Amino acid sequence: MATQHTHDLTRRATAEGVGTAFLVAIVVGSGIYAQRLSPHNVGLQLLENSIATGAGLVALILAFGPVSGAHFNPVVTMADRILGGTTNRDAGVYIVVQVIGACVGAMVANLMFDLPAVTLSTHHRSSSGVLLGEVVATFGLILVILGVVRSGRSSAAAFAVGGYIAAAYWFTSSTSFANPAVTIGRSLTNTFAGIAPSSVPGFIAAQIVGALAAVALGHYLNPDIPAADLIMPHDVTES
Image (tube, rainbow, N blue to C red):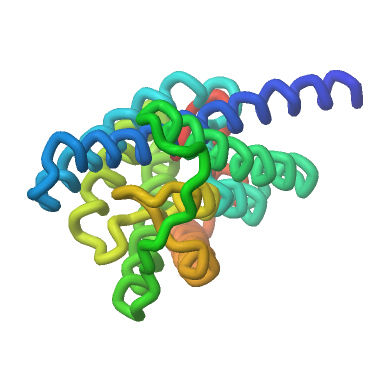
């Protein structure tokens, strides 16, 4: 039984790592291409980046959701653990492979555009307004996931999450990273989507605060629902 669980966890962890790598490659790669296609129009660059990210996220969730739940995000995994949907061991493995996948995705994106595999970003994102934007972005992401699942429409989660992230690029001051693994990966590219390594701890702290607040509100709004039912099971989806 233990061997079967280990094999299943390995399969799910592989899906999480590969999915997160693709997610970051989409974010970073589309950002690089947007800069090259529209070098003098930052607004158009953001539009191109947000459309690619939202669309790619929908595709990745649909592809990997049936295998691992398609978290691709340590705060989603954290929420899953808090709400009883996974174990400490599985959550720990997920988070490790998500971070590794994110770093690999950023490096692959750099290499695809003939850049060094690692170019540490110099784009500082540390103002109080930007950090508040990350709290709001992550709070909204977790609430969207919980709300869609609670409504019994888990099959629509891919579109809800992809749509939310695309929109949050525009209404949050941080352009909605909302993902610690993606944040770490994006520190490895000194391009449009990059974030300076010194700004990463603040972003991750803001993301954790936003996620915890969303879990608390989600549980408050649905007090009669078993905790594990508030997060997506592995046979559906998520961001």
